[in-house]
Image (cartoon, rainbow, N blue to C red; front, side, top):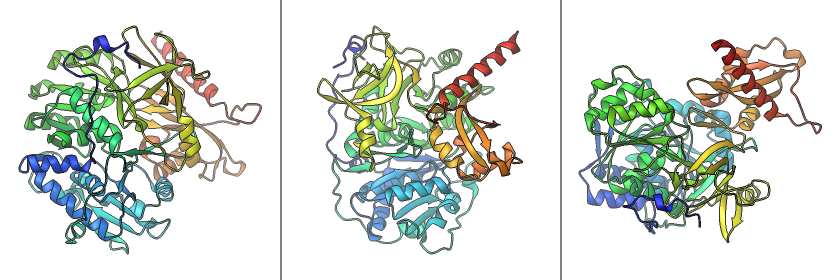
Length: 561
């Protein structure tokens, strides 16, 4: 067991954390019984109590079961942050099914893969996303789509500027297999006894990989419970805390820090559907927000807004996140303005968010942190499997209660994701890093071919597989390019088919916008006569990647001289 970090372990925390042996839904039920009239959700000045939240979860779960959703079935959840997201998530669990959260930026071609992979018969989606999914009713196993307008939970008037999506009135598509949200809640059915336990299927976020298609990360109630409870204990929050939810709830970081952990203790969640730094500051001031988890780019945007001092943010006691290293000057500004440190952490979809976090009283900048409760983390030589020593760079591996069961229907991929060491099953993260003499872990690079654009993970092989559907593209190689705002941006190197030489870069970008999530769309297309290949015909993406970054570095150096 890795223990180099234990001398620097938070003094008020135990090394071991006993986890509840219950389903995740039970957390909501307990909080609603304890605090029925307490506000569970604030949504642009509309308040939802824990009693109301539980009631609507029960009603929707009853509807799911009346439509044939059974224990272990997959239900796709396709929408942005909203009360409906939380209600649907817990209703699926109450019905003993498994939630499959889908990035709301996904488009039809991506949705086809999720439907084929999960064989889901039911999708719950936001009204504005319905055109992406309703044409697929009757295909694969999909038989029903429940749609909802975000405005259905704007019961009170508000002076806050609302995103466009929240201004749309209810307009349920009149199509076979489409059901409106209110009709589903009003079905009058209550679910049967809740059967799920800690080892039943709970949620399956998708994490892409080098195979070119997204892979479902299968989590049980036990693994989801682990990081929800661990985060609450590590950051010392309680039912009196108010959490600002700006991270996307479909992603494991937002799911755990801004939904499942707060519900576990009965805290209040202030939900934002779309990021707006001024609205975020106003909500913090108006509702005395005490905790805010985010990605670094979001925190940077927030802290660099003009006249931030005009807001009373004295209630804020904890701010942190990950996705990229926090710039030193911005971290210093946070310290000067609020007397707070930015706490960075590290985790994956395969680990249901954090495996490492910085201690509250002893954080290090641009650092992943130390292994959390019951997590054993090492660094190994990725080729030999030999365990490495401090300051030696290798692949980070992790063992702990939050590890997923494996990739959905992919036994070989699952087997490759794990390694046995000292009789334990460790996850191979694919991330290169090291730990220092005090047991703090640091990221160096990624073994996996992945682009980190503002905290969104873009897998080039997946983007390439989608781009090959374009009739003009003969070959393409997706690489990262430096971006001053996002850290990295997506770029595609393309060769065109002989009869499509007149195709423009903008035409390909426009096509990509229609066929994939916005964060995956290449920001630049560079046409090549040919792409460098190995002797066996494989594209040498690493060489092309290195050339791009070297070229950009040379340009920046020339510009400063």
